[in-house]
Image (cartoon, rainbow over all chains, first blue to last red; front, side, top):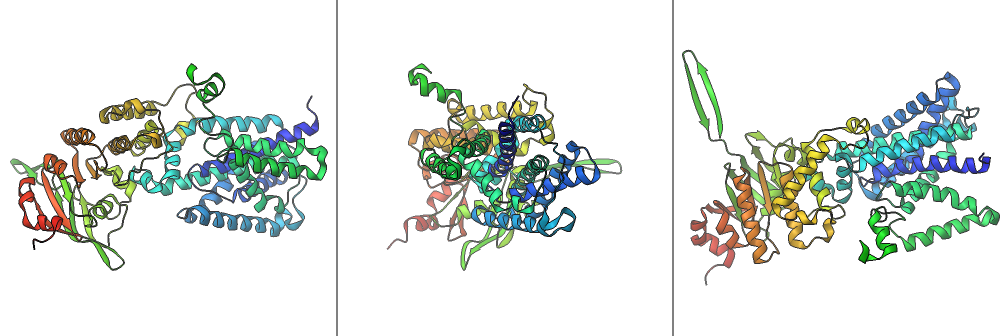
Amino acid sequence: MISPFVQSILIFGGINAILALSLYLPFSGGQLSLAQGGFMAIGAYTSAVLTRNFGIPFSISLIAGAVLSSAVGVGVGFPALRIKGIYLLLITLGFNEVIRVFFLNFKYTGAVGGFGGIFPLTNLFNLYLVLILLILFFHRFQNSRLGRALRAIDQDQDAAEARGVPLTRMKTFAFGAGAFIAGLAGGFYAHFVMFIESGTFGFQRSLEAMIFVILGGSQIFYGPILGAFLVTIIPESFRFLQKFRFEIFGACLVLMMVLRPRGILDEEVCQWRWWKEKFLGKGLK
Amino acid sequence: MVEGKVFGKGFEMNFQLALPLLEIRGATKAFGGFNAVHNFDLKIQRGTIYAIIGPNGSGKTTLINLVSGLLEPTAGDFFFKGISLKDFRADQRTAIGISRTFQNIRVFSQMSVLDNVMMARHCRTSYSLWNLLFKPPFKPLKEEVEIRKKAEELLDFVGIIHRLNLKAANLPYGEQRLLELAQALATEPELLLLDEPVAGMNPIEKDSVKSLIQQISKRGITVIFIEHDMKVVMDISDWITVMNFGEKIAEGEPGNIQRNPVVIEAYLGKEA
């Protein structure tokens, strides 16, 4: 029905979209994390070990990997949460390297040789089921008391605290939940490519997640999803240019940041009113 | 006022103790070697409108920041309803009933007016992530409906209900102040700290804020406010404290303060 090529793009797009959402959640509370690749690694290795070595069903392994990733995220993130902006970025970057080097040297999961022989359990159905559930969750979350509190923290941390938002608790929650979602992405990734090594989850993976969010727009959760799919699809659709296709991709990135510096989607674009005014003129409201 | 009953053998007795709503004892805040607030004492009784005045840089805002928990005091104790505020973070102080506005307006400019007020209900609602995850579809949570109702009530009270869906950044200056007031009220405070509530407003807006403060006070909320506009201060306050160089230089009823030579000197300088 779908060619393997299209299928692999759709699956990578879905995994990237989940990874993008994992970064969006803490970012909506003002915390930019460069450790999402590391959290992905924890989810990937944990779920792969559980399905291959212990024969545990995929769904349970997936959740176990995400829970472990989230636990590590909360444990390590907790002291880092007093720090904001560029400093938090550096700390999370360092943390990502710690995880990467751990898996590079951890004998049980193959160390430098990588971990292979993972069962191909990821398919379009289970991946997109999880993605849709996540979208439903974010849809509920953004207009809940928790979503509003995170947005307030993002804009003015002290004012949010003066309005009764417990900063540490909300930030830890956002960081931990982000790590959970990244763990899910890792689990799906491992069971699709069937071979994982620590290098795949390095700094570059985290940077990619950041590109998804910033390109797609960080104000509303549809943005990161769109960003993830674009970044997956654009380089592939210029495949006829061979090695130059990343030039095109880079140019697209620059162009989009010039045209829409705050990301492709923002709250305005996601309302019907904006489209009506755009195409039908302001008089028709 | 603390009311209670004492029971004994064959008798019972009602008693009333006049416990101040807020008591500040020896508050000191030093920035480097400079004492912004120095050894400051204050007792606020329930139900009053209390004004703190003084020249710029006399430590009024620092005092409010100390009470609301934005700053840590260098020394001194703060008691709210007899409870020491020492171990309370700013958000916990809001939760027990101390709310404030800021001198330089700090509404969340990228959020809608409604969201701004709704977010301030955070500490008065308690539904968790699980309620959110397992809520049936197409039906808002009961608590969320209540939050919205309350927020609309308050926006109506301060008179900007017609701006509901506007981004806070797009509100005119005076209405941003009103929005912040609605936010502060949304946390259901017993003590409301207002930092220059009418700064930068025109006379008509000033009058409406004046009457708002009086209505808030009638609702049983104790108000402390900092203000430079003497007309507003004299019109609505029950009691005035005058600060200069971080210390209390005078206090009393509006009429007495107006004639106090120390106060006149602090504001206008010494007569030659």
